[in-house]
Length: 394
Image (cartoon, rainbow, N blue to C red):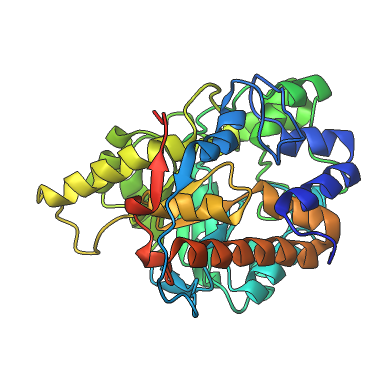
């Protein structure tokens, strides 16, 4: 692991270690699949997966000089919890595809690095076992709402009882995007793995299985049991979630100022600016390109006096395309309270389990500290739009 000095170094090794189906499942976006692997994860194709990463290069940093940067701190708070840096682990399904210890290894890395982790409900390790492996960092649970609402209700109650701090409702997947490689490969979870948060009787089928193998007995049984995602989910269901749990509510998948304002109206605690890593609707803008407009809309909402929330201002997070520490600094400067990484965590897992994830975090933390010192800032809350120069962003 000492030979890896960038996240791209880790990725290059990880993709070699993955089998073809796993590599295609994790590395692909929806529809357009062309990538240029020689550009540090930047893609050459005109698609969402490509732009998520490439658009960071259209933002330039503006360094200030002759400032005392002898002590640089990454320390931050995310929804009231102290973390080592404003860098968290995004939810991603089935870590058992790349690591025998699955999400238990991810949790150990989160705990050791002081990083918030969002556990996918479609994990291969139960939420209780993940909690036991993560004593020193906050945990959130990601949620898909199934047609049988008792499934999601039970999951939320278990998570709250286990000590999870927030529920992250994925709002950009009423149906699954057309992931061409998964369709070609008829991707499904290997038989030696299980969705550990659900009982066999519940018969939960992952979204991927529904699309890739719609005629399988497994999927047909799930549909009959109401154990598939509910496409009728709407804003009013936030009230239902609030009636079920006292955990904080985060909406993941906000891509427009209009929906950000609605999230404020519904008094959720935070939003994640996300296009699902380019895996849902293709040719949407990159997350970094829409972040400034969403931040401006939220600022205007609170400045107008419309907010009646007693819990404070909504927090804004972002994921998608982050491959180096300066990407994180740019996102923070443009209004994100924190950023989430998905694929880089999986790359670390594939290379060396928990130690591999720790290495990814170490690299990103080192790059953040270096970048902040060269920018002339010593704390993450000093990052603001004056630190960046935009060129031709939407």
